[in-house]
Structure formats: structure tokens, C-alpha cells
Image 1 (tube, rainbow, N blue to C red):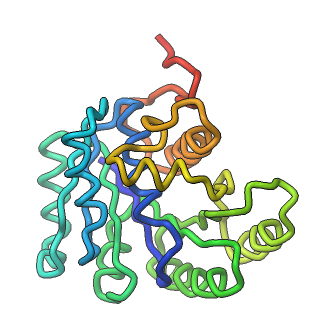
Image 2 (cartoon, rainbow, N blue to C red):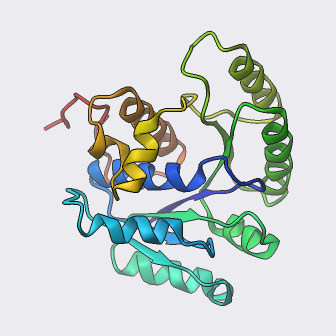
Amino acid sequence: MRSIAFLTQKGGAGKTTLAASLAEIAASTGERVIALDLDPQQSLTQWGKRRESANARNKIIVEPLERERLTHLRPILDGLAAAEFTLVIFDTTVADARAFRLVCEVADLCLLPARPTRLDVEATAETFRAVFLAKRKAAFVLNQCPSSHRSTRASEAAKRLAELGVLAEPMLSARMDFQDALAGGLGVTEYAHGGRAAEEIAMLWNWSRAQLPSGQPAAADRRPGRQAAA
């Protein structure tokens, strides 16, 4: 079993939205996914509940994980592996250094969302330093970029983040499909299959999957419009 954690020390970067859509695209490629919601607001948990009435085609378990249970995180993950889950996705809170540290210690890949603003880049740089000190694999995810590929602001933010560490692929544009999918209890590839947002999240999943430890059944490239290999 592998794990991906969305971590940030600044709100508004879109970690819950990305966690939801990444969980869904992973499930569509054959992963057995459980998403653990550490945020007291429980936005991801509410998304999971909306899936029950949204006719969602891919099964994803979403569970809140209370702060007091974090000291038992490794046994919890051992139990999930025994239950044959293949992927855990953590959605974390921005204001709990202890939770941040404990999740860092177990995550195979830490994804650090940031918007293309100076404040976000600076805050995410601090997050990266904390993950680096924990000796975990990490990458920045540049999110909510202007849809124009010629955006100077996005290009400058990408350059700055790449200088600090690894920048995940691709840069994600600010598209309403992401928000509308979350509101409807869906992943963006369920909500707008074949759209640009769906293509971007599929590319992010393919990139992220390549960074994870091997040993799980490989799934084919599932960009919208492509079929899994027979």
C-alpha cells in the first residue's frame, strides 16, 4: 500500500479539491482508495457523503481521522493494508504542526499545493523545508493558474518553486470544473470527462504514481479519452 499526503501551511491552495479528484482518478485506474480527512472542517468527508447520492462510478472510502488517533497512525495504515487498500490519500489541516509531522513520517509522497502568488510560494517553501527535514519525497503542485499558457505570473511561480525543489507535472489551471465536481461529490474526470481539467488531473495522477514505490498492479495511462490497456 502506498500513500500520498496533501500538505500546506496556507489555506486556499486547493488541497481538498485536488485530494478528491486525485482519489477518484486513482480509483478509476484500479487502485482501492481510502481518503483520510484530518481537517476539522471535514470538507473531504462531506464530499465523500455527497458521492453516495451522486451516482459516482468509482468507489472511494472517505473517513475522518481525529487528531487523537494520529499517535496510532502506523497501526491504522497496517490495518488498511491488511484490508487490501492499495492507496491512502491524506487531506490535512493547515494549523496543526503535530499532525503535519506525523503524516510526513508515513507518507510515500507529499504534494504541496500552491497558487501562483508570492505569499503562496513563500508559505509553500516553508512547508517544503519541513518535509525535507523529515526526509520524505515531496513535490510542489502549482495550482489555480491563469488558463492562459502565457501567464507571466504562473511562469515566474513555477521557476521559483523549481529552484526550491521538485515541481510536479502539470501546472493546474483555475477551472470551474474542479469546484463544480467537488460540490457534486464527484472527481473532475467523472464530472467533465474529456475536459481540460480532467486531462490535467489525469496527468498529475500519472506523474504522482510514477513517484510512488513499486509493487502495486500497474494501471494504464488514463487520460480522458484513452482506454486501459488490455
